[in-house]
Length: 415
Image (cartoon, rainbow, N blue to C red; front, side, top):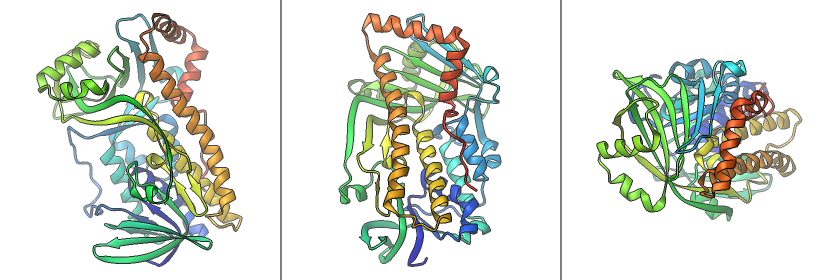
């Protein structure tokens, strides 16, 4: 651990570790010194995949693949990915439906589903390789308790056990998730709008194999997504994200496994036969959240610390990853130009570009949720006609698919 760094990343989760990995291709060439500070201990055992039926998972858009390829982790990551080869969108009790196919878009997959623990392990393993250790200090377990602006830098107070350390950097990136007390201490405010909904997240096993299909099913009690996962112990496996109203949450969580499966079956239908197993159930409140201030001199707020959106379109992590790659590109260009990584004018340009992406992605998720939650019969007819039109109109389908795959953004450049 040094006292001064070019960049300090607070949070070694998927967002923070991805930023460190994104900078690695250029870090040695540009002599960047980077510290990643994480509250949890780092696993010391060799990289291995540990199966868990209850593993939480994330949907990666096809465009996210290019980012992880540039970071040098894609070949390892894909050892335990489930490709999304088809997307099936339907409206329960109505005629509207749309289907997207990877073959129609000339790609091997529309996206991928990765278990969070595997993605995290692959990223952290990359940061523990000898070439990475030359320019990145991984400081853990440690807790950052204060950030203090300094002339041209940002001071960081952290504790390892009872021992305090004072560090500083040209730029501090806060990638510590959506529950950071640091942001409150800094007076960073948020626009927050609740949906009066919770997401129930679990894994389920259907009788029939999923066939690489991701299902988005809209119902009168909330949308649900069923994502393809790797089979395990002879059982087919899918990740379920089920949106329910706040006042229904307790009653659904109180159901035993058989009753929960019966309720799910009634909501989803029998496209995959009967569900035969459900895993541990998690839940969290759904809200739209956007930080009103995401950059200051020598400071950037990134990932869930900056924004949260409805999971209806599965774009939350992909939006965060686009921000990660855009910031990495900007920092590389700034160092090449001899500029400070914390220069406010540069960070404000980065923020202006990211804000348009955030507003577009959040707006799409928000408007889609409200459209399909409406019980207005005219809106219902309109959305069903829209789904049917997209299903039979190849140009409209391709436009939607490219947006869902994250191919409407420029290709990243991290060299």
